[in-house]
Length: 361
Image (cartoon, rainbow, N blue to C red; front, side, top):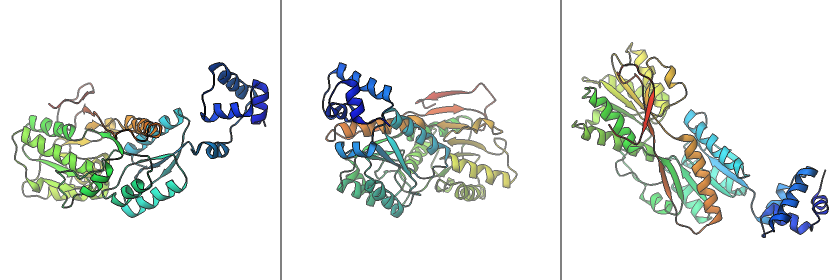
């Protein structure tokens, strides 16, 4: 197996120069750099990652903490993170915090102990302990999908102003949530629906608060009153959403249309409708936040908001690498536009599938 000494001899340079090329620890003339890289390729030299980390104090690894990795949405985010990391020569250490604040803190500590260069985290509904730990140890971190703040319109009883204050030092990237959700509501209202229900996510998550705010904005834009009886929490899970949908359907005046706030809850809502022998859109129109690969295969085809999940993952990597390159720069919060995918579960006639970004109808 070729060594660094062999590379130096072949390129006609010192071992120190080879080290500088490999570790970017000192500028090297372009011609010299190319000679070293050519020697590395010709000899098949494989750098010692552990030795490199001792020189640079970097492991070229990123910790990714994302719950429900089996969820297609988070799977696509993972693909975006992985592609971005590999493109820049980083490896991933992946852990599932299970949306549990105590386990989330343990995951963050373990990744930090593994000396990852930085972390990308989809935070839980109560990330205070993790945020405090990351801030105390100055761990470069990007929060994705859920912003760490107390959403002012969250229907849950408690807020998290403390987490919001500490989160100001961290970069964040997520999708737009308010206007896309409002678009689903105004679309259903435009079809004549006056009792539009919402199966909301887990209380405390920023996505839950923002999509609830979008639901309220959509009702207001359509001139419809907000009726708290038409709101049920599905806790971002299929089984809980099935129970929440059953609750809405049992009302004396049940909704004629339903918005589900993520893909897992859409499955639960459909299961509850099937259990009662109700059809979509014949008995109840349905629109969902989150598109997924088989949404077009359902009968009817699901009208949905598609999040740019792979782009969210890729942007998280870019933000983290920018932070590693410039630790003192101001933190950024990026929000990416979603697409309205118009199909038939809303009650519209079948049509060639099309999507629109960022427009509320």
